[in-house]
Image (tube, rainbow, N blue to C red; front, side):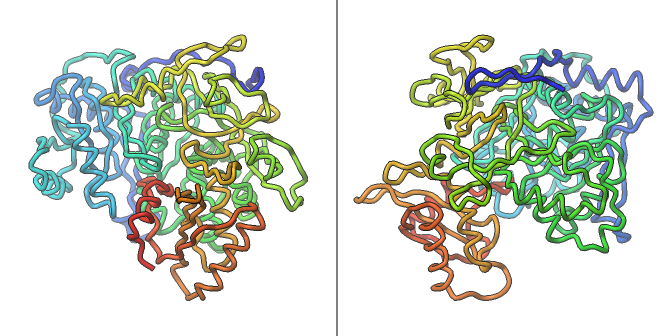
Length: 585
């Protein structure tokens, strides 16, 4: 078990060995274990039995396919230029990313134009990334071509991902500090920006995950339904099997949403499986998977169910553990985590075999920035799940105004320093210097002074564990008190059954009388509700739980609250719609 040294509100785990690049490791696996299965894609759309049809690639086939993609790229694209990947979930996507790495071309993992509601985001990213070409499959080439032709200012040529093409690419290796890909942020707090992930970053982060989760080399299987264009989906599915010399078993996100039991069926297949999902996925499984479907599940061998990407709710952890206790699930496998694209993806997590740390704090004291524990049944309590400890990187909680580390138990901005931290955003903007390369005013023993990533997230260290409390940009300050939007949103969604879970946005607006709280909430998809009754329940709950008057409450139709492509509530976009008066009832 890794021992974490604490000094005030700083945290550091034991060091992680400097890894080789993914390209080097794939070539080694192809030479030494070429016949071993590397990636398995389960396609539920083409199979009527319910168990999915399976396509697999061995390490030798992965290497050959990546070389073929690299050769096709190098006939059209110079090293260092960008190639956008607009392909559906599948083996072709994996090989396209690795082929770009082989060719020393900067990949831009994206999605096909038919992803509902995100055409505008795709166009903005294409304009920003300015790719020299677009990698896609033969089946999706038509729609991708039509999408590109709609924008006269951006018409990169298409390269079809051919797994059996000519594999005559130059036998070159990327440098550790060469950019491997641009990971565009979700845009939950501002416009999407391309984080420059180097080959060193992704290899280091994979090694950190291995250390943090205790993954055993050659034995573990990464199981995923997460989109490959998202940071966790990409690292979990593509990078981790390479770093662990293991394998990946993955499917399309739509297959999970249609039948969530499929996710757990795949986990059940493999001993020592590890997987990840946002908080809503665990709530979705607990609510949608019935007892009959559980009879075929065996979750006793699962190493880790990482829970991250959005606030981790203690009630969700407990509910999921209860729901699948009969399937052999060890509650200690439920692993809250914290990360962000600017740190490749992973920063902290719980440790395998250790139950998640759940602690009740005084809500009023937390609003003042202090961690004061209380009993869970205290009427003024808020219960938080720890996001664990870092692995192979430094973490500090810092006063954002003074850049001085906060004492343990005080809320501040989370700062990160390590080989997984990106060098910056593509097309550097003036505000980048406020995000990357920050310096501590004073440096406790063992911590670097400079080179810190300011995450924009708020949190605290309590008893050696990181607790994330909110976003600095989203913080609501009314009458001199801090209110965390996700805390208000949970209160609102629990106030009345007609409010759709995880479809609530809380934010502040400036008026002549100062800053005030506004909440927009979607109604449930089924059933009707008295809007006056819902509004009264919400206003009462917010006043009782937070001691704050709700300036305005909108109860809107399902689907009206804007979300990012990763499913997060886009509070800034919600605020813009509210101020523009563009919400429908």
